[in-house]
Image 1 (cartoon, rainbow, N blue to C red):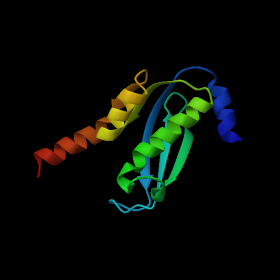
Image 2: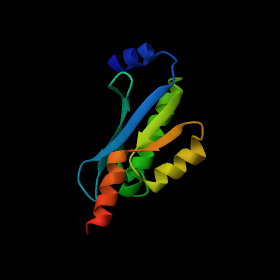
Image 3: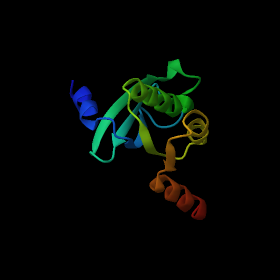
Length: 122
């Protein structure tokens, strides 16, 4: 009910989203994953998708599946995404280019700088 009210309140304006996923355990043995989409202009989470790893090829494919299901949900709600910011996963970048070329896909600066720091300071 609250989610639907938020979606109705957003109207038909294009969404500016930030998305990220969480796992129930670190590494590659997660059983459950959650992916949330945060609408940056209203500062609210507009969707949360839960995925069990047994429903995907492997737990490392969970973020892509979670994102796909989340964007499918928004499409069914007749919402348009203008921009989405995600962390740096090659599978997600390829997916966005192939499946959602009209959505501007940006990478989260925090994840990029964290990777560069790790590379420069072994």
